[in-house]
Image (tube, rainbow, N blue to C red):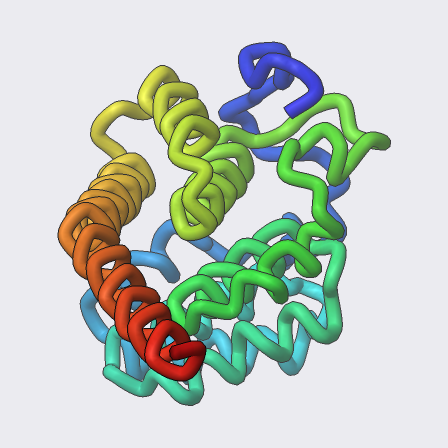
Length: 222
């Protein structure tokens, strides 16, 4: 990363002129909609679909739709909502993070890097922006940290984790990243243990094979 993460200008206030949000004058209570997803996801799906008919440019609604589908166990439809959001609004940060999260689950690390144009710092990904909402920063570095863990860059993953802990130490994104790092560390230990036991056996096998070859050659030369 080119700049210390603590230099990011973060706000907790709603971002002005957000082209991906539901228009303010629409009078939609997004917090209430989020609560409805958790309690009555089927009703939430119907409301979100109606809102998308009115405000198709509000990409945030696809995130809500995906969440509602997941609450119902409709994972294929949830993925389709994520995919549609990214295909139509590839510059929308949450479209990127949601799609990248799915790709991480599938082990498609190459696509994760492509989604972010190989830019793993939020300022580099959006150089024209001077300010970011805390939710944007949390989601972005949660995914980037998980990506680093998946490719074995545990130092960078832990750097992201440390930064996120400064922002919201008990957030689910922090807990998920801790779990991803822990799994990678366990995997690395298993690989190390495997090679510690296998390398001597492989060397012994190679030496045995070499010894046999030398005996055969020696017999042929007599």
